[in-house]
Image 1 (cartoon, one colour):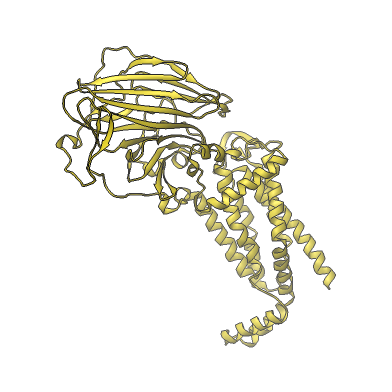
Image 2 (tube, helix red, strand yellow; image 1 turned 135 degrees about the vertical axis):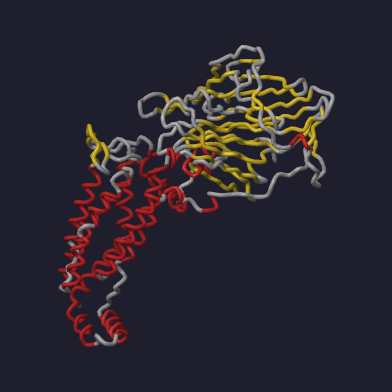
Length: 564
């Protein structure tokens, strides 16, 4: 591999890494970032006192009362609100209020936040609608602040009820699964208590004010699951995508929707077939703590109708838990584990890391062992490329003669050079292959270490306490330009190792190539700046790989010396 190829590859790698850093929100495949299928079916579904029944499949004209209207926030009912209603199991503690019949907070008992407290899933808020608020019903009412009657409270169950205009009675029943569970059963019972048919639909909040652990604009997102054949397709919109522009997803086959940050999610999954018509995701403000901007996701039902005395019951499952593959599989939400374009590679790497972790329970050592395995697998290619570079160095005088002899005939010059390479068994592009093969691994590992739950708060050794964050050897009182308040050691170690590796590379007698080689000396510094704020697990992989490359070069030099 000549110096031109090395420089091109280096700058190409630099461009790719810059792309990863500055355009990270767009690294998801286009089909996962937008979805605008067909519009709302207008034929209503009916329900009788004996249960729901469907109307004919032929479209019907939508009644005028179903047209969009300005929502009215209903006044207080005279019932005093009941706050701090607690139901809990081994995994989660949930706190409810009868004002809106909503979930105020969920605490995940098995996890700690970065202050050492039990992890809180939602931010406190006085104004934003809370999770499970019915923010639209009958096309004209917002029940987010409606005070419901508390009809039942047991250690596992709460039942809220309210009536609207003496025509509709609404009962919301919450049941928390016992034992080791991250889910809540939600039942919405709509009853027609009038003597006329009621056309009905409603919208319910599936996530609001998710507590962010990562960068809110990149890691706080709305998530929608759409059933496509035998698979479930993920539609994801980050908070950055939603800035000033709500996202509307309308489709047959929507089965769940909610909000998520890097490691946790609040997702409402329908247990009633063909119930969800659309999902609206929007940016909201109003939290008591920073950052003020957050996300609200609402699920809207299809149209249905209640005959006089009729009723219809809808059932949901509310997931409140970690984005761990084993947990998500249990609740049919594995699509939430999304690493972008290299998701299969990232999941494979995660399984490899977990396998090493099962032997040595430290993900830092698991990364080092995996790096050694990758280098061992690529060593035959690396050896071949390095040997080719040493041979290229020996052929420089002959190459120079060919260039002088055919300086006016570039085609002949290229033919003679290729013939020379063939006689001596040299492939000028062989040096690129090991690096090219490592780029998908590097990117997939980057996404794995950035998003996989296993890396959250995973310590390594010495000063590295969290492989999902920069290593932060020392914290400064005043921030430095670009570096911020933290001095990170791994990027510096990586840069030094890269400089040593470059000094060990075969030199080129051509003066022009030597000038280009001088330019290459700045690459380790540039990469150190690019990767400075990346997860320490990624820097651990890169640094280990560079140190192993130095050892490879020493070994290959000895092999070359034996051939002389």
